[in-house]
Length: 594
Image (tube, rainbow, N blue to C red; front, side, top):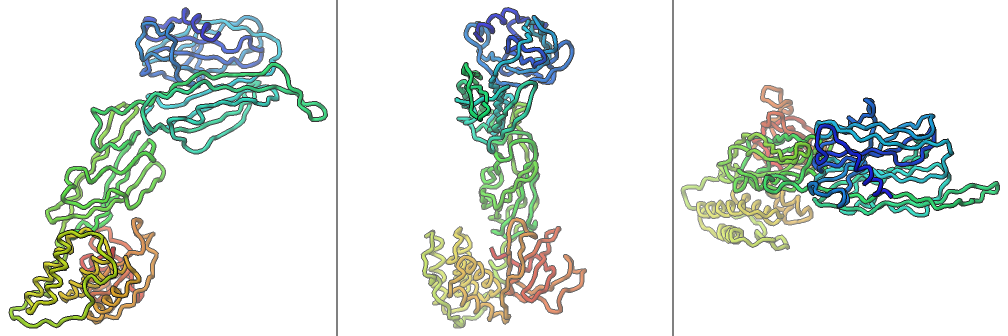
């Protein structure tokens, strides 16, 4: 019946200004006859290319605009398709008009639409209006509200509307698009009830997100039910016949992203975005020190689908930086998504953080867009303790004073890695303990230290060995730093605690660590951050030597302090001591315990 009606109306479609093969428009009233003073429920069907642009704001009837609701796409039958291009498809729209007070045969004027900037119109059709009261009515309407074209990562809405004008019990409710097979659901179902004309309406909405490209066809949706009256004793008296309404098969096409033009930095983001990259740590760093980058993506699109660009694979990073592409933190707020990522320079040859590239697909312009940040200048230095100034080898050969320390690997756990450099470093440390001259001992210890520092392990055992090596080199502040790092990973290890106490005692300071601050509000990428003073430092009340001193005595090398924030210029650090002193010291005087 419906197909016959469509074929009949097909003969009447006349486009304005184009041949029939370009765009074809049909408009008709769905319910015949229509009750007077009721609402006309009609449909506009547009047969055109799937890539056409239908302006939904320019539907008019007799020069007056009418509101339409997009119901989805529909494949034409082979009889209608004929010799038309294979990408030809129906755009289906619903509209409502008042029936008025007149009964009898009425004329539906031509409905004009704009497709790809040109105007087309349907052929006027007739419908019947009767004064007969409406009987029990049950009608199902389906709206597929998705962008056009539709790409992975974009969202749309499935909307079912059930119209009824009587007491009705549903006996069947088969709504396959609510399951959204092939799509991910966003949130839960939303339901609302309202009145439209002579009908009560139950509206059910489910937001979906496309995950993969492809063509997804859903079978027809069906509802069935029986109207009933309620007797004086509260019993239901069901009426005949069984009411049934069907919404036809629906096909949703998720377009694939173009492979030939896809940038290497594209990770699936779809929308329209901007990118900002800034450094949260100072511009002057040592080899191996962490640099915290803040990458913020802002714009219109599905922010949940935006992932951190693969920094490790981008030009200028490989071989020069150690990079963890798993963000330290990720935060979504309003229309932006922010990533904090840590990189570490591996050589003093590095002069800048290279530009970072982020690509997204713009569905409105149907093309990829590549964003690039600017280079961030940095200065990379060798760590101070790599060649301690105070440990220059003496000119004479003397028997060194041995400090009684447990063996370097006496931690009760095996090292997780067995690199050749690590084995060699352990061997050099053992040789240094047997050396008969200060020069030979210091040379062996420095060789061991350099090899330990090339190891990528992040264990208590490695930092314990480095601390022992620095202790034997008499660089006690640096030894305290690495013992602290080891203790952070094994808080209950007695060997680490004992050697830390010896290093502190060798410095002549009496430090009782005390946690004083919740630093999360100061440094959003970390919390409870502490550092070790590696050289004596005066504490100032502001981030400059021009400010008054915050204490009479300088901080001693080896003291542990809480780090509150880094100054805007990046050269000063705000700290708090266990004695309650708060102020600023030069960045060069402290190393973070990480």
